[in-house]
Image (cartoon, rainbow, N blue to C red):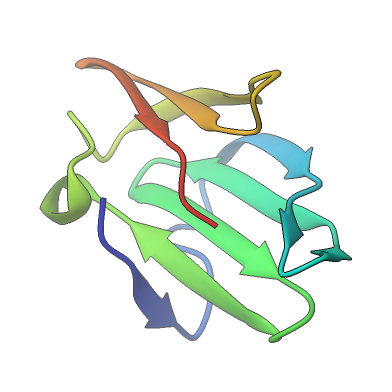
Length: 89
């Protein structure tokens, strides 16, 4: 999936939140993932900014119901049209 930096959440209709702890370039940090009715927003406090993921980036639907951080560090998105995963930073 691609990435687009945005000014805020994809939608104020928040459905789920998860915190990932990626270790990128030997710097561990918390990244907040927010499932909304209009896609997924990722907030990286080290930048700080939001990035939005939608169907244009490969989600089956913009209506994201839940998300989970998997043991391998990737993120799973449950949408009303199926499941998608993201393994990027």
